[in-house]
Amino acid sequence: MIEAKIKQTLRDVIDFPKPGIVFKDITPVLKDPQLCKEITAALKDQLADVKIDVVAGIESRGFLFGLALALALDVPFVPIRKAGKLPYKTIQQSYDLEYGSATLEVHEDAFAPGQNVLIHDDLLATGGTVVAASKLVEQLDAKVTAYSFLISLDFLNGRERLSNFSQHTFSLAAF
Image (cartoon, rainbow, N blue to C red; front, side, top):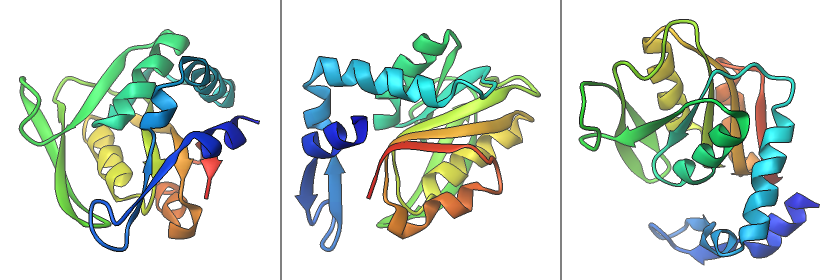
């Protein structure tokens, strides 16, 4: 039910951010407050049996439901951002993605050793961004307990790259 609603509401943007890419735009989803509530509840329900101490959201669309999910789970939220965007001391991880390369950062005190971290983003494609975020979590001696996504592009096999970090990968709508 939620998968159909998400798929019906998403907008495909052809050739963005470069030719050959079909971008899954979630902004129409964000215009529907009831759907956003349903998404947050569905994400929370998927994680009912997973121990989570903190939710980490990946810039920028991972912040949207990542914070809502952290509030629903009553745990802290940590932003994982592009390089140069965080004000305090950071650690970095560079990575390749479908259409270039980038660097992610997190504050050096973002996670306590041994914490169980849920990494959330809006979309799982090849997994490059999420693997980089996972390495940041591990650099701080915390553990990736699970991943959650609104959308997964399963034909790009990103889920397989995440199995090195956690056995729990959830998405609400798969393509």
